[in-house]
Image 1 (tube, rainbow, N blue to C red):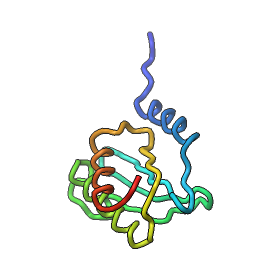
Image 2: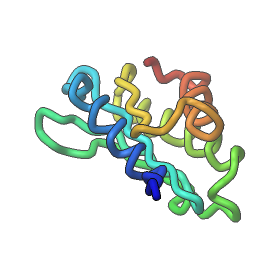
Image 3: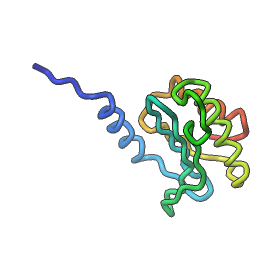
Image 4: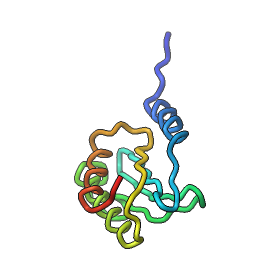
Length: 118
């Protein structure tokens, strides 16, 4: 019998492949997205130093339901505002191996609408 590979293993392999070509610098840090069933988490990372510059999540915003599209949009707006305060204008988008669809796409578009460039 053929054993099916888990979706998370496929996502991790895709993420590893993407990260070979993607890294954040001081001028253009990496906007990393992690999506779970219960929430969505975002970090802006400078890979040259290995330091998180700003972060946001649906749990930090104390949203009632952190695993839906409205939460992703709220987190996208919040991370864009925090980046403006930290004087970060452009980032490299790292979708974490997830497909650019649904909550990940909603977060990215909300961040772009609020002034973040990528």
